[in-house]
Length: 388
Image 1 (cartoon, rainbow, N blue to C red):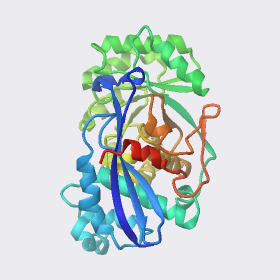
Image 2: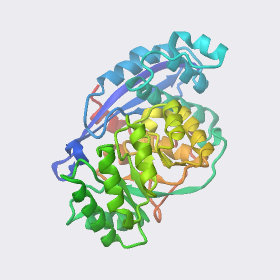
Image 3: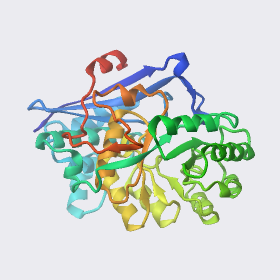
Image 4: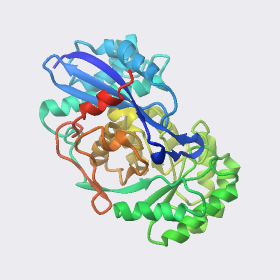
């Protein structure tokens, strides 16, 4: 079970012109990108992971590829692939790992956030995949077993303007037989009032029985977020996601204190220490760790913090199939988890990268019992869209 190789491939998938969409304030999405991590043991067992540093098709993945293959990966070659937590500590603490393990506290390297943690997440997912496959059990079994057989999903999309947002969200509901949808607000709209009108139009179209979440992608200022929350109070929102910049924890707490709309956040955070700060400052009601930025090892630590503080867990899994599969494994095992994000954009990385897929049945996703992450990579897809 010793690690023989760790490789990374930048998957760059162009979207056909008729499948492109206006992705909030990021502009028109023309591609989907991610980094596919492949780890092989000396015995030939292969595990896969995903590392995602940007949203949609923004940015380059060459830095992440270099981190995986030349910085972090070489530290693990020749080691037992099953020692997943130890490998997380090795990558996080670097040459001072022996101090960290002996003295029972972290001695992190300087690059302890950002791209380094994202690269670690991709490796971590692949290592968990190998561990599950080696024992022929799903990862949720290794995390203590599953708390549930299936989880409800919510449609993640909602970019249309006021006159079409209701139709778009109703389309999601009908396609997936869903009971919850999420729409985007914030800087994509010219004013706070425009965001308010779009939410009001969505509520009018959907009626009272469908949950609506809103996501500002951290683009409101604190005063704007408070004003927005006040004006949509009668819309009975399920949550208000990333109301202000992820750097502004004080702003988060101020917004949360001003409204009874649940506040969600965390997709831009990286470690349990970040989430511990969100909990201590009473910033959010719902944690949203991104599996392709945090990985399974650290997300389970985040889930424990959530449970201890009575905070819900709704993993951020808007991306490729590997991060979705990882989020599904965590959500199966973590008591604090209660719902799954389901991308309703045209997303080949979610639907075509693996052979199994993640079908919606009556608005829910069933927890698979296949070994590891429970997916099989479509090698032809990787050959076609592998950029580096």
